[in-house]
Length: 305
Image 1 (cartoon, rainbow, N blue to C red):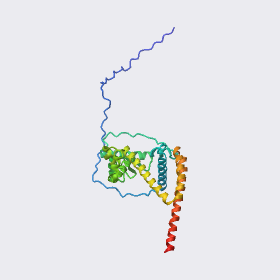
Image 2 (image 1 turned 90 degrees about the vertical axis):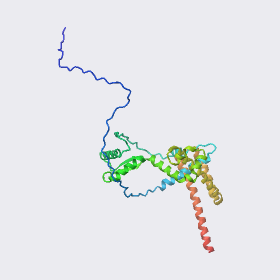
Image 3 (image 1 turned 180 degrees about the vertical axis):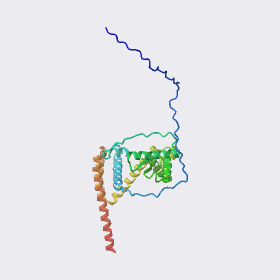
């Protein structure tokens, strides 16, 4: 039998006891304050001369109006047994099958400083320039809410050379809220305030927030209901006018309404394309007949003269 013997090492460092940490109920850690360079605003500088860009969206606008027309016709034809959903759901059901590329979302380091200070906003803009240079981008887009947007543009106006490649915009949500407030300001005294309350859609205590665009969900719902009601009135007036001016067009319209009724029971993108073709043919026939009537009337007036 063989025995192995190893000498006990004498150069080992003794294990030091771990420091004891007092147990507390605190659920956060203390972060050292971040000292940012002071941003001296100085004298304010106004915005530079803006360059306007003409955006032509006639095709998209016409298509949107045609889809709204099909939607309201389906709603009116299905009053007893409603199968056509609301405006938002209808546009989702009939949307184009467009392939979307997913975005890669990355979270930036947190700036431990009050967001309302000019030095904090200035640091955000400087960090944006670093990101732009690291990614090799020509421009970088900064999206702010309305309060921070005012501070950000003030800094970019004062230092146009440093932030020449930085584009500052207001977020989509705050842009829509501004639009809703504009609509409320313009039509508040034209009966929109009374319509909200007397229809039972909005409570009396919420009208001020609706007119100011601060209650987003309720305001959007109200405008969609008002839009549907106005379309119904317009369509009833159009049918009454058509019965007295164009009997042939009324017959063609009845065929289009039957096709729309079939489409309303099975809403799809392909069905929408087909119904739009029928409505195009109806509109073209009425337009051509009215043009001929106007030209005949002009010829008769010239001959009588």
